[in-house]
Length: 212
Image 1 (cartoon, rainbow, N blue to C red):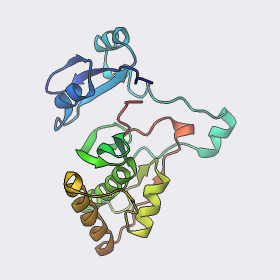
Image 2: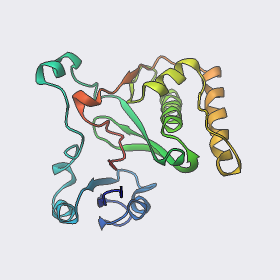
Image 3: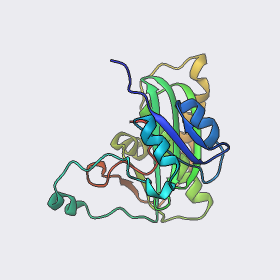
């Protein structure tokens, strides 16, 4: 089954406008601080969105909660003064990238990739370690960090990336990053709460790449 085409609006970036591919969109936002962009399911909707403000659409294309209002109350609300991380991978394995954003404003604070022959779980793990190291560097020792990956949370607890993919010349850079991340976990302690982002209650995590 062919993948449904997406259109991408960039309100703030190196170039702004409506773009018909993620690769073109990424060139406009990669390394651009405070980039504002969203994915849309059709060109008409994207062109209409471009004439409006990013704030009119921020969070509106996220996955709708799949639980009742009473069930949602059990989860409460996410802590907005926090960091959210996520990964995206085209294939399994495939081209992988990850990033971190401020949960409240969705301001991107780091992005890495794409890396060849990676997996989403590896990206989620590296994103968490990257986020933890950044928070330590900024002396935000109790600042929470959200992930929607239980697997990545367990790997952090074990201080080991328990992937079973094969490493070769195509992804040796990724292997080196994993080794550095594991070494950082072995040598450092942290108090930052690592919290599970409850997608079914709150919608997609703010760091989501918006390609679903």
